[in-house]
Image (cartoon, rainbow, N blue to C red; front, side, top):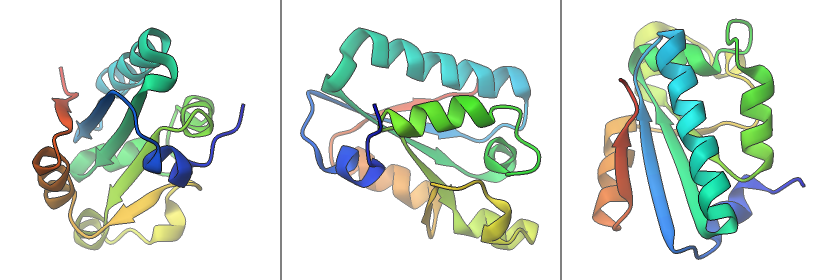
Length: 128
């Protein structure tokens, strides 16, 4: 089932979770994806999940480098929203075109997390 990430963002769910990914470590990125899968299996359509990616975590969404292309596509199709920090892109000299498709961009990853917390979202730092 394909779900538009923008529509998934707008739906009301009992659970709203924002994950922070700041690691380039494959094991930590895999752990993030596993945690997301587990929440979706448990709460199905009653959870909205956003992932804010910044710093070294940008490796997760680099189109040519990520080892999780299929996982990211599957999660996006299920409604998970991935938000990439524009500050990180500027600091690392990475063009938005180098980021895989279907990502959203935010001016500041940290500011996005703060906004979500102020709106009552549950916050998970996904580095182990």
